[in-house]
Amino acid sequence: SLFARGGLLCTCFYGALIGTVSLTAFLMLPWALLRVNGMAVNPGNLARILENGSVLAKAQTYAFTVLGMSQLFHAVGMRDAHRSVFRMNHLENKVMILACVGGFALQFAVTEVPFLIQAFGTSHLSGREWLRLAVLAAAPMAVAGFFSYNGLTLEQFAWAFLKSELLCAGGRRFVSENFYYTMLNRKEAIDFD
Image 1: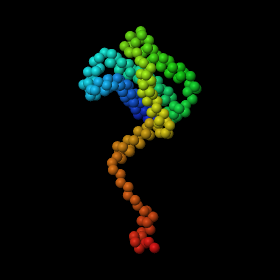
Image 2: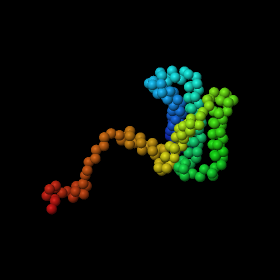
Image 3: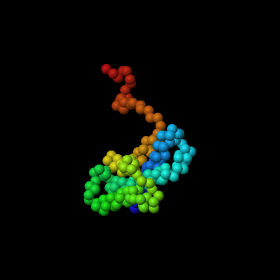
Image 4: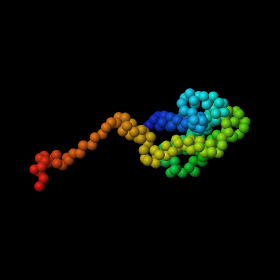
């Protein structure tokens, strides 16, 4: 089952990560425009700047592109949950390669082919925008590689973090004890020769 042995936690984590990355992509342009214009970054100003149709279309294109590409990157990264993406032999699964190339080509076409831009309501992206969005979309694959590289599964990392930061959180005091000295039942100063 997909949700057995920690699959539910893994699915929820990567879903939240991809959602956060997509929301970040959506807010990149409005945030930058607010900063350039010297305006405070707050929900009211964000709503005001998104009333501009071209800014909204570009922000939606950013989010759509990152969402699509991050799913493709995630599929590559999760092909083997126990090995890092950098240690996999990607040439052994030709169908996966074909699917990813096809997915990236379709994602590119939706933002570059005029009649598809019109049909999907997207905006044209420059090379620099593609590069920024590709780096942002690769975050799930990087996270999957991190967990695989360090030998921790996501569930093990989540449990260790939860335990150290929430369950056992608080001040920790180190008290030194000499168990050998205590075992021998000695009495302080008279014991030293």
